[in-house]
Image (tube, rainbow, N blue to C red):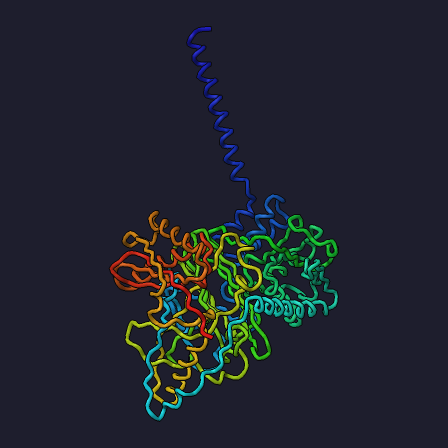
Length: 634
């Protein structure tokens, strides 16, 4: 063979080898492209476009006729669609009494017309001035002086109302457990009273599963029967009363691996009702695949809709998929019941959650606001909780001062939850609780107008009993690494009244404040008392930066070391930022909030020991002052 022929053969062999490699690569690429079926790709495309109806049809088709490997993914997308449709505003046919509002924080405004009307008076809904705010305004405990004429001096001699001491933690816990258990028991009996409903209980008396025949809910199609409303309300109350439970809803036929499309859609109607009521999306999901659920033996052959309860399993508070968060973080807020009578020993469970989106979570804030007493007066906060990480939390509120004290004034109280993601997109939800009964005989005093810029605190009474700390199980037992912080409340000064009766009420309130503890049951310290026994620390920041430097972290470690031997002092954390205006104020709040959050997470400092303040000044720093707790006056 000639050298020329040999060279040609080598070239041809090399070309064949390269062609074979290209064919293999093309086959791999083609195989990856074909990894998802056409219906699955169409469903994802419609989901990302926001065309949920079209996407739902495709995912249903995958679940009934598609590849087994794609069914779990289709099931997850169906849950995402149901959450997206029902964690904002309620559906058009939602029952009255479930008011939900979704407002962008960037454009705060008055409550929408869809919200229920207030029983009386004028209402102003207050939103944070800056969407990235992580701490409320500072709380000042100093009261304005009240001038009294001679003929009104007798009002000052009136004895203050007898103070009700703060109840013990164990007494509050026992009462909360009993009240919530009573809610659960009464609603479970309502379910058992319905024919053909089956309930499997565990050794503690909690439900392992509830089986409900489909005809009890539906007659034809996916619309609920009118007679299904009491059953849905009972299920909702049970869900609120079982904080530690995650609920898996399975359609008829899923237990034997043969669910129909109609049954799947009906099941999603039940999950949509729970989402609309305010149950966290992290607790409720539709499961259309029996292989992923352990059904109790007593109900494995049940023909109907199954609700399976899973306990003590960590909640998944991280959401995947950017399309689910194009309008801000996924949030939920619910209250059950929405009308309570403190005089009859009733209370309401408040549940809220904030799930972390792919863009990250910048901050969230929950407030419980009392009704306004005057036209133009802001709603006074009873409870103000802030944080910067994903959270699931429950609060029990019985509408009384110091839990066992006098009932709060009758009226409509507002719950507000605001969350902002890493792209500065915000969501706000509103719920209302109506307190029944007669108005309080002593209305809170209306303070005289103060100079511009001076902030005054509202004697709003104690916060609700917190089911995450000192109530039922703490949220840390469910969500590892999540700390719920509590911030002091603030209030703008109210307009002054000039009548003699108003002056008398001011004196009575002033005398009462000297005898009663503040919102956390601690006596109000006089102005300037913070200097006694105080220990000061200072954290330095780079200009225009909220980041904690290594030097600042070292100072926080010093504070933590001191707190190991000091379990009583109050921490006053004041943020400073150079400049003026809202940007400097927001930066100061951010710095103080981050320092407080680091102390709570790293050293377990209880949030009730922390008071957050902020100040726009010429300094870029955070001051931490440890102040000895004052002894309670007998």
